[in-house]
Image (tube, rainbow over all chains, first blue to last red; front, side, top):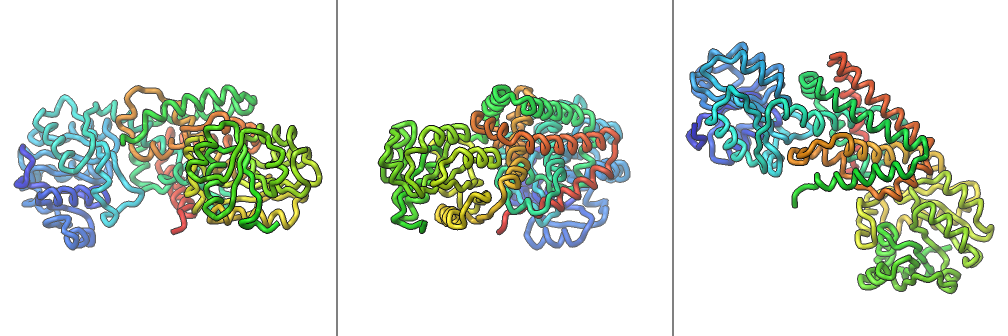
Length: 286
Length: 286
């Protein structure tokens, strides 16, 4: 499939990410349709010119006419949707997603999907603390990572189309990982950081602390405002990898705590120097 | 003392904070002198008009002539400096500091200080990840907290002068806490966050992770670039309070980990909802 202005694109789920996709693709000159739960979200997107048309119905003509369908739903809702409605796809339809966990989702999806439809999984590594189409903003994709997680069931053509989709959306870096590599990476870089932010935010309820907050505490807890339904689903879908990363982090904190308890200034300084050196790898490219 | 353009101000230690103080006070129309270790730092500050004069010597005339002296040194260096050189002060001199831990420092300082000189402790809650006068920037004080930690040994006049200093430096909120309250607050809001950032930065050394980093990991590890000498001193000077906060945080992480291990989605969601609610208290005032 050549992804161009004539491609019939359907987005299912018009939330903060689905809305951002719609706006970015419309800006790129494409005509985007959408199916979502609430008419008010469709009205919002239409009034801002983010989509060409939208419906809350399972419109067979719209679904059957789509060549590329992007699912921007909660993981469990996504799988349920496919199970119940995949008879509406036309043969040859390509579907992709935005789910933040891959291994279990891709496995299950590809095993239940009809053989004449292809699912190529992708993870746009960009988000906002708020949910809902009114917070969607295609600018968050610029400078961000778009990760495609193909399996042996995927064709080169589908991978190429998905890569082209990431380009059209404006992502800075498009890469491929296996679903397992993706999930291990995301457990550390994203899921563990959210667990830390929530744990920090809830471990000291002394009143009035907010009066003295500096930037470091604010930075560490920015993501402590969290969509509880989505993140608990993502955590459970990646439980083993996240447990490994969490335990490694707790060990690391405990080791630091033990150095402090022992008054081992040199040991703490060595850790800080490693940290300073390793962090420089993670600076944003200028 | 009325702090005005005629007040003779001396800054001891021209690093990132001392340099910021010098620049802010000079901008406020005051004439600032400085004593520091390296001539190159003095040359830098002179060339940028940050100070009126500077020396690397323990100039008795400069020290004896100063009415207000700000010490912007490492905590241990600060106490050592006072012990060795306090005979150079004139009677009635007011001294203050920028040290990030108060209880042990204030106790020791006030107990060794000659009785005709007053020490009023203050903590400017603003900093940068880099050290050195060339990274100093008075803009970091704007919007930030300035905390004065008086004891029963302090006079109302000294507290008022210190408050006025915070205003001249441009701090948004000036408040008073006891040294103990300050140290408990700082253990949680600042020291624990640095320990978390260093522990996170050093707990997974998988090569190539930096290619996939998103904003959440970058935010949580911004302060993982850390001045190892200063922070290890601060941690050790506040060891008991920091150990308490660290243990509370490790307990909080372990509890979350146990919910995940048990597959308790509802328990995780409840934590995330508490976190989201509590975090809104900490939003930056608009």
